[in-house]
Length: 294
Length: 187
Image 1: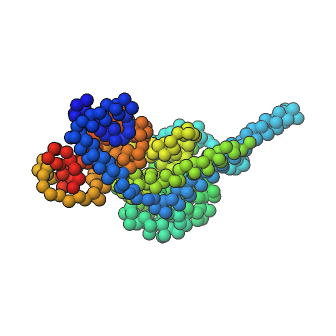
Image 2: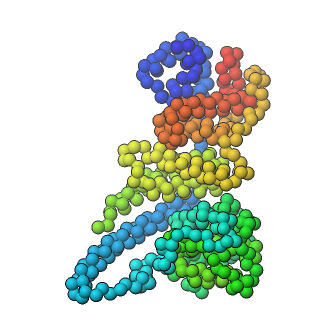
Image 3: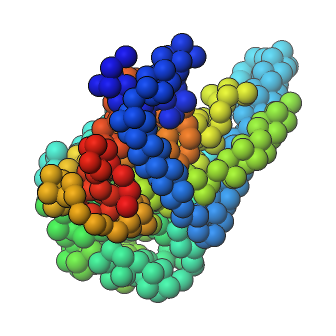
């Protein structure tokens, strides 16, 4: 082994990544070469110096944030497991009852979709929309505001179980928290008249720009609101007044996803809003109305 | 019919993952160079690792596994951010070595090994990650290859080049010197 070969292998030697045979070979070279021994010493000193670099410890706030989000993730899993279990029992019970009713009376009772939706605690999605193909109905916004990619990203962001960074039911308190961080000033709306509770907010991204994601729980169902600078969305419908809103064709500002979710987008008084919810269209329209009535 | 094994898995995940949070955060900070971004990265890492904990093979190195999750989350977010925002400061930006290495081969210099950390952060990401994983966390080359998602040969060459570059930066900043035999020595 010559010095050139040895020099290249010194790092591996120090990292203990050598086979015994290679080790013997390089050690033989080192025992007879003062230059390579010095190179080895230098490499070792550098490695030792790096190894004593102290990494910063995780802040306590991060630790508690992670613990909270893990807890919420666990609860979601258990709830899901519970739902699966309930569904399994439901299918079994339904099968038994079905067979029984067929035996008992030949005419089957028609089921009521709305009632079923209420009973199994599913979000209030209009059943007729579930199998609907994804369409961008608005001509004015086609390929511009409601791009399929953006709608998909919004739905993913809505569904993803992200913990809030700032928990608060007070819009002003939330706004105070995100004002210095995002350049957004308007406080988030309240949907109290709809039985809605503000849960909290999280700094986020909207179409590649800083935004704030506000979470609501409306009658137990999650509603997500993104607030952003509307300048990043050329073509977004700017609502001028409540009268203007009332006259608007709602298909201009609401789109429906194949899963039956509603995604609304508009701007009002210099702030961009995007609402994503598993609610019926009239509920979304009312929520938007309460924003533009402020 | 409830899956009690799942509950045990949750506990097992916490037992394994919480003790490595400092290591993850410290490394995340070195990767992102930003406290808020590092916190988000670690939080997303925990959520993703928890979600895919079933894929962790018992008896293997959990720390290496969760580091792998973190680098994936980091690279995905980094790529996404880069794609969306052309003005974002490129993490891989090659920063020029200050001063002239050749001019600094002689003369008296002072050791500022505390500065080493700063130079480590200035290394391009592809070199910085293996150096941190090898020299600070003492992962094996095989583990680094899995964490960084590249072949072992690439790890070896990146480590070699990363350390070499670090040494050049130290020489240029007069932290280390080279003796008469051409060997670099800290002063």
